Image (cartoon, rainbow, N blue to C red; front, side, top):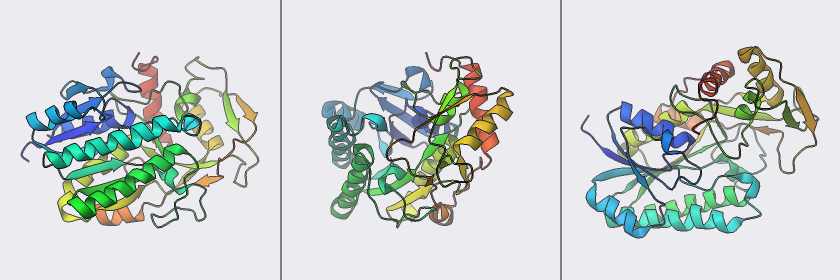
Amino acid sequence: MSEKTILVTGGAGYIGSVCTELLLTLGYRVIVIDNLQTGYLNAVHPKAQFVKGNIGNKSLLARLFKSNSIQAVIHFAAETLVTTANTNPQSYLRNNLVRSINLLDAMLEYGCHQIVFSSTAAVYGEPVDVPIKETHSTNPLNAYGDTKLMFEKILFYYAKAYGLKSIIFRYFNAAGCTDLYGEAHDPETHLLPLILRVPLKQADNINVYGNDYDTRDGTCVRDYVHVSDIANAHVLALEKMQHVKSSIYNLGNETGFTVQEVIATCEKVTKCTIPVVNKPRRVGDPARLIASSEKVRRELNWVPIYTDLEAIVESSWIWHSRYRRGYG
């Protein structure tokens, strides 16, 4: 294929780094823009052009679009730490909405009319039906999910008024690693890397919040999707953008695993006993969160490669064993 230039916002983050790696492997030219607030310079592939800055900087965006023929944008950049979403909504509104609107305006000004948006299944809130379909009602429980949903609506208006085509992905738990790029957050809030800190001798135990849910072992059920499968969906969206309408898709394995099952799988993969400390339930934690991916499989021919929890855990264990301090 002829070389196409893709702008990846938030490309120094977890999913952005893996998506950049895949794009480069497939022959795309990639420009990464990231302010490194939560991303890491070492997570940016050396073959990508890196620009340090945020998408709220209008003059920076103007220079980027003027000097490069950017065909499409993959938009990962966002404020994502759910624990502070309701105590500091200003940050979410500024980063996830105001700055993202600046990005859309720059795209329109310089003739870029295609965007793939990394949203979240948190837009659904407490699920009524499981697995959750794209037609499920939206009722976010915090400013993180709410700002993602607001931006989805903004994309709808920009499509209707200005012909900006968008494909939106909603998903719950990205997990796993590639050989080069993995999951490293500060602070770390995701279950799998927190569990793996125990066999890495970086923690004594894993806290489990609630063991009395109406599930098969009393712990919450969640849907884990390998980060490579998520990245592949974003690239499929780019490749099929001209042939499909603007649309919203869920990404999921449609197979939920309990917290206890994830811990047991980690014990099997690492050959290490992982002590559990049971804690009270957290407010707003639903018993089951599983996304239906029937639509994306049908319309984009997305087929996840990592459908087995053990394979997801193993990819994480290999990366975290090799990079014990993450990107530090």
